[in-house]
Picture 1 (cartoon, rainbow, N blue to C red):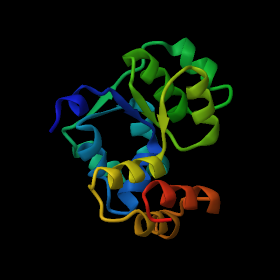
Picture 2 (picture 1 turned 90 degrees about the horizontal axis):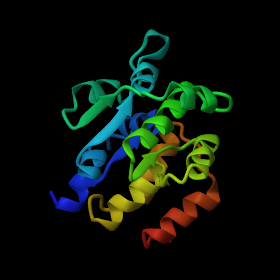
Picture 3 (picture 1 turned 90 degrees about the vertical axis):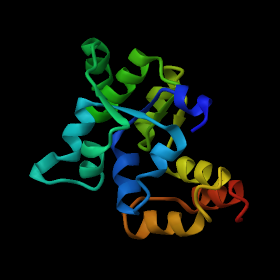
Picture 4 (picture 1 turned 30 degrees about the vertical axis):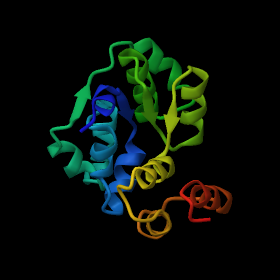
Length: 169
C-alpha cells in the first residue's frame, strides 16, 4: 500500500457502497483508498426498511471503514433542505474531516459538495480509476453490470465518456 493512498481522507455516501457491492467490486474501495469514512446516516440507509441492502454486510465487517459521528448538526440541517440524510451527513462529515475526496453519485449531492469546494467522485469514476491503476481488466463489463445488476442509471454519454477515459472507447 503506497503512502499517498494511506493519507487520503475519503468519505463515502451510500450509493458507491451499494452499487459496488451489487456488482461484486466492493473491495475496489479498499484497493483504491486504503480506508474510508462513512457517517451514521449511511449506516442507517444500508439497513433501511428493515432489510440489508447490498454493501451493508461488507460495510459492517470491513475493518478499513470507519464510522464517524457528524458534529456540526447545523450544516446537516441546512443541507437537508435539498438532500437526503445520507448525502447531507456525508457532505458535513467530509467538511468536518477535511476530506480529500467525497464519494457521491446523486446530482444534487454532487452539486452541493462541489459548491462547498469538495472534490467529488462517483461510482463510474471509481471504476475508471481502478482501470487506470490496473485493478480491473476492463471498464465496459463493470459499467454493464452497474446497469443490469445494480439498476444504476447511466446515460449513454457518461457510459461512452468512461470508456474513452479508460481507453476502451
